[in-house]
Length: 550
Image (cartoon, rainbow, N blue to C red; front, side, top):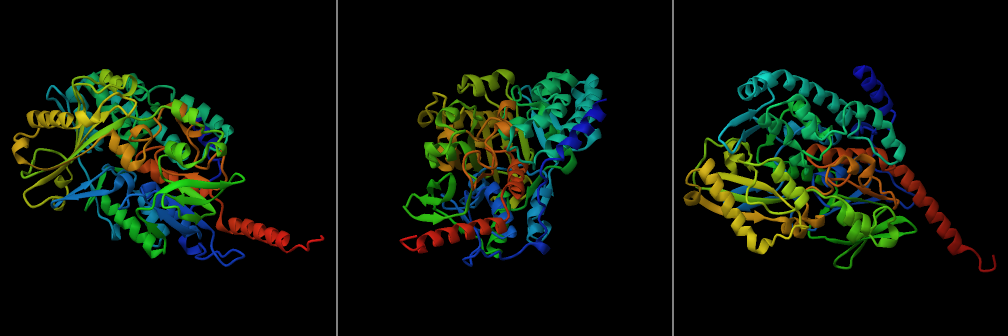
């Protein structure tokens, strides 16, 4: 019965407007309008979503310019280089590489000819506060063996959970991730199949349906934290990540995630796409409900036929668009929305190689649900924490000087609605994390520490213009998903579009790359934009040249 219902639901879902998959061999390289110029697209922000959007639009024939307010491109995926160490500032978990491969293919190239992706195993080593360790991999039998070590009675439940994750993946990712939700009817169409898949449950709630052991429940439910969600509040749609990782693996780009940014930048240069750094947009300019361009903080005005914001969607609406131009995303609605937690990130290098530390390590503290409630609900900085530790030099030693290691560790913390005074707490919190790592995993860390740099919620707001300093924009709860999230095509303003974590389908590398893919559907072809331009130009010329006595 479930299979028949799911199949029927998917059949209904694929009636959405399909993404116009781009074939580089038949894309017009130049689509002039009546005045001899291609329609102009401005992309605000150079994160993965913005870079992917720029590639897709250029392939379709737009004249594209990318504006980045920071000195280097990449947005949250920028790179910090300190004393011979290379630190990826943000994304470190690469999944669904086919979405990256597609971008290279659109430009007539192959990803593997420019970027080396290495498989990571275990995907994650999960270390509990009591010393127990769970090695999370993509191998079904090894995963059953790990579950059996903790709870033999949960092995069958684990298989059932993965089967459910696959069913959710086929709808939530394969059928819906690349589909725009522009109308309420779009949302209504997915209600029956998603109800059948129990999307009304939380991630933890769905895991708990199949798994009885608390530690195994934590292992299978932490994934929403990678995209800004509380496992006890995020819709169980996000359990699709478990199957997505098994299907395509977890990878690392040699040279760091920044190597992917550099690769995308090279593709843009080959397509003559302009990328400007230290170019901050102060306002998106609008006339008669349609985008006309942007004004920079320097006062410079740039014309555009369409604008794509890869900036935080809440910040874009709240601070870059005047209130009279937006009905749906008023100041009040933005302020009342729920936003993801923030992060405390510590980048550090050591003069010692810690061979026992895996590439990705999750260190779970003594509390799970209560700690998440402190972060998401009570918005207090707790005395305890859970950590994600990234050691890229496990896979690529070139990211640190010889005989050294590079790390970044992050701790989920409340966003800026918290009363935390980071001017006081930054160094105290860093020292607590250092002490914990030294006592639990990295002996002698204090004496081997060589470089250190931190990022707090204040930094997320200052560096990335993230509303309330949240790390992943709108919190991925059911009432802020799909149609109920800021749309990829603005509800209020013609010619304005969004990519990135704050729009559909959400955060994470697959999410932001998918949001750029949605543009293939919602952004009109350049020919139609050129036709509209020509009509407007001719109409204005006719009025201008009309005899005075007409």
